Image (cartoon, rainbow, N blue to C red):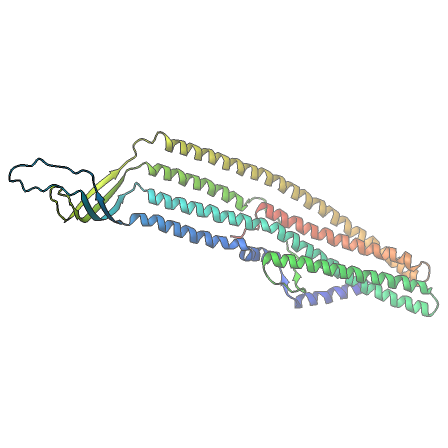
Length: 421
């Protein structure tokens, strides 16, 4: 029986090698690339580029074309002197101007606002990275569920082959009168039950595989084989969760906001020019249409803002404290999760160590039961009890092994060791 198990395992390994395979790390990468929210990284960059472009246009000249026509109830009247040629002003007046304003100095306001936009972009993109990273827990659940079903199916196939071999031997015993015919029926019923379990496991695997396929947005064939991940060791000196970088980028964004507030109070200097045509022109005493122009400099400085900027900075400082408390809370909760995951790993390792001893003993008991069945000492029902006990122990061992790998994978996610740059 042991030799038969070895041969079947070897044959299954050849089949696995011929089929499509998928690793856990590949699933992580596919989620990062294909999940819909991943597209936001580039979209956010495009939006920020447009917003910075708008800010930079503030350095370009501002050109306005203005025109007006008015009728006034009164106009300036000069005393009439003898022989005076000054005509009274018209009550209807017309003016068209082309005004150009050029920013010369803004105290670094545009640069500070552009820097703030970049800080906002980094924080938003990191939030996308955080959301994608959290999907790894779902990947783990689907991946290891499929692995467990994969192992369960393999064991059921081996169980059915061995059961069929035993049925053939019982048929021979029945033929020669050494075994009662009812024994064959009992084994055949068990064989049908195993076929039913195989069908159920295959349907469950198909459902879990479809869920994983949807999550990573990649079509997976039903015969794809998921490879068992290797965890030779777990790092313990690094902590690379993307949430930590997100908290830091939030503080960086707040610092940039403070800089924008500081720059907003600095003086701004503009150059301006105006060219126009109207009646009257700049000479109010000339009651005719004239062209005119003027050029100059102007400055604007908000010397006193009633403490508005100071209050805004204080509010931002409070926001920084809030971010710091969120970071501390995250680290505390994460430390608790790591301790729980570490305990779970130790517990499952102890269970696996016991599984090995249980299986060895179950195999010995089954060998004895097989011999007793051939000699008619026990019934098929009694034989099946030991037969099923062995395979329940093997399935339990595989379950614990998959649970151990899942616990290690979850530990790595909690720790941040799967953080893809």
